[in-house]
Image (cartoon, rainbow, N blue to C red; front, side, top):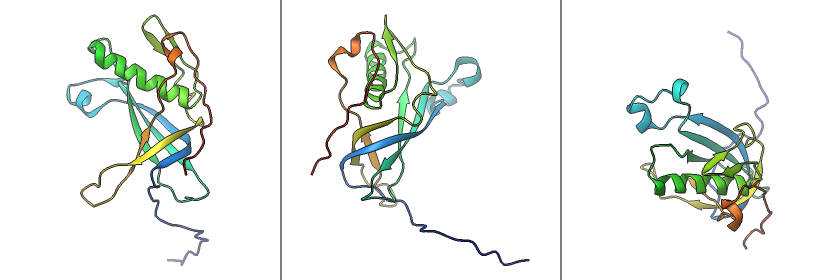
Length: 165
């Protein structure tokens, strides 16, 4: 067997960043089915996804080894209670507005192209969650409040926000 020698670069473990506002980029936006729905026999091929998993890269010179931030976005379903459906819709609108993703909200329906989010950039607050069983703390995404006109037929747009000191 031959000894292989490679240039290793600057390999370091990723780390959570301090609570602050950061520029983020959506690096994946994957349709999936929640664990609860899978257990209930949900068929993604027949019914489609009931949520999306989004991964965000932190664009920061100060923290070049920032850990990827993962967030889950449940989709409003026909059998949801009104309160749950409204919350899920609002969460999607917040995401789309913060990252300048085109969407249409009209007549109680929300529509978007699920290929649009990847590569979109926005500025959001990242907080630190509670320590897990290993004592690790991960960043959690806090989306800005939706603009007042979100109830109308809308297109999202990202506005840069100043970083807090």
